[in-house]
Length: 221
Image 1: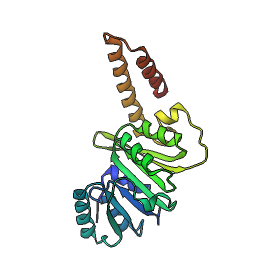
Image 2: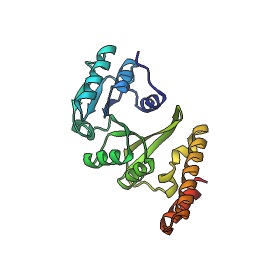
Image 3: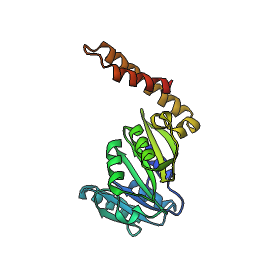
Image 4: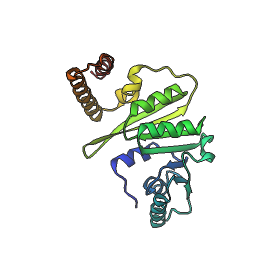
């Protein structure tokens, strides 16, 4: 049986029972293998922009006997056949927030449900989703070693009202995540405090940057 790290397990937990999936940037296809082995999904696509990761993915799928249920696809971005299918869960994980936004922008109007795990710049991803007509339907944190990982789900919606707090922190994290959320708050407060102190000691003070950091610190506090 395929075993998943806490980060991958949280991502996989958001896939709907019976959903077709597309794992974009699959690397070793651990999530696709786990979904098939545990009966969560009957099939899906594992895609990557490079051949090497797809060869690793093939080895994983062969090892667990899932090779006939997961299509390996060499492509850049989201497989076109998945974009308009509302019954598909599209996983984009293990990338920076800027790259995730770029992939989503290139795909256009996505009807499929999104499962996103940015390695950094989660607020950038939240802002992109809200500004482009997506509703962030859930979000959670998991701790793996010393690192916190953020996973969110989103779906195309009508008009979704949102605030600066929703973008910077995440409304679902505020409501749902206990100990991990406290750690998340504390780490962001520490980073912002150090940034403000550094900006205030700079020879050329950037008052706009200081003001923006203080605003963010107020939201986290």
